[in-house]
Length: 220
Image (cartoon, rainbow, N blue to C red; front, side):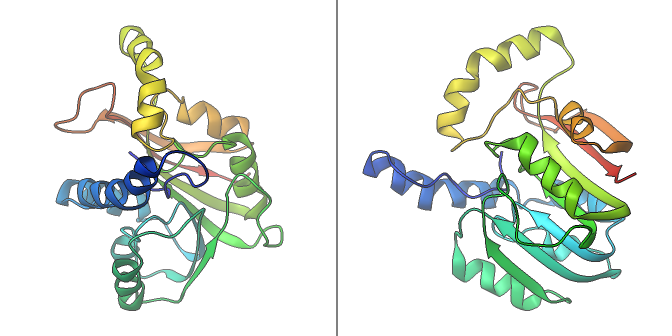
């Protein structure tokens, strides 16, 4: 799963067609269901003020933000399904500013620019994840919240071993998606204090692919 855009660059034409056209539609469909919306709304409920969203994807979060959001700055490394996204942006009840940027690099915003940062189904696919998380930490105001809904490494050793085994295949099929990242540990290493964390298996998805991390962290 990924909320991030597909990888860009080299590779055979068939992979370009898959990553640019087929994969985004598969993800938009699979991540746009009612159960997903419930989890999005639960994750985004604390969002307020100026919000930075990492991995905007096709804009599926837009309809789940609460009224306390005043502006959204969305960052993704590529654009996809653009007509569909433009429609979702037009219906948003707050201004949306979009940037085509790699979150693993230094983002062009001053320190402490945002009240809230958001990542949904995205941390699995950022190549330079520690750098991206440190950037999120830099951009949050003291006391600001980082809200996340991700999948990652299982706490069950047999499942985690299987995730390690199949991750190279998943990385190709999922256009950069990694199954075996310990999301909470990655967030803590960036300097955040996790204030809320729910762990569960996404209904109807095999445990290796559906281990969910839903929670929030604060910029101390």
